[in-house]
Image (spheres, rainbow, N blue to C red):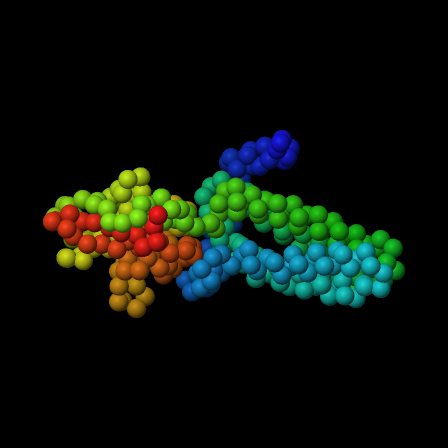
Length: 298
């Protein structure tokens, strides 16, 4: 089956470096506004375990879709007007979550995301104008008024924005768990990854289990092993930094790419933008050889 004609255009959009100055400028504004770490974590969706934006966007999309249907039903002008307003108001927290996620993406994702956000912003402006027209009574006759026309135009724009959002999520894997495949690629059971005495205490090390990269930290006789591929966007964790947890009770690793922070004790997310934890391996030493096991692997 042939691809839609728009798909090659998206391939060009991903590599449109002309957008980079605008991307960098807006990214700086977003990171400057959303500064508290707890707020960034909430907007990324760390407490949920997955990004907040795809969930939050269902409210304005649902309201606007319902409004478009009601606009075709005589006598539903008041309900449609309320739904348009609800969509505009609920678009604000959705946009806040979306821009926070967007500020921590790769270059190709950021370029597509910029157009995605522009489409959604334009749709919100059009829906606001539609609401104003409806309040002024120009949509009361039900005969293709300015308010309804603006609403249908806005619905087309937001549908295009949603198409780009799908491209971002599924084609470019923004927001996906990039460590999800690890348990399916690691064989069940215990596996040697090197001699214990080759590991320097207190230093992040890189080891391989077949084709699976691992992050290893030795602290005396204790060893912590995580998947080395950051669940956010596949950053190499062994190139990151060691830090303490907010409570000071455990050590964490900070991804060198976008600053996602994970507990070395459990693999859980401490700070975003990652929302999924790192696969955590069990360890043991047999005849001086460090062995690892991933629960649930295979």
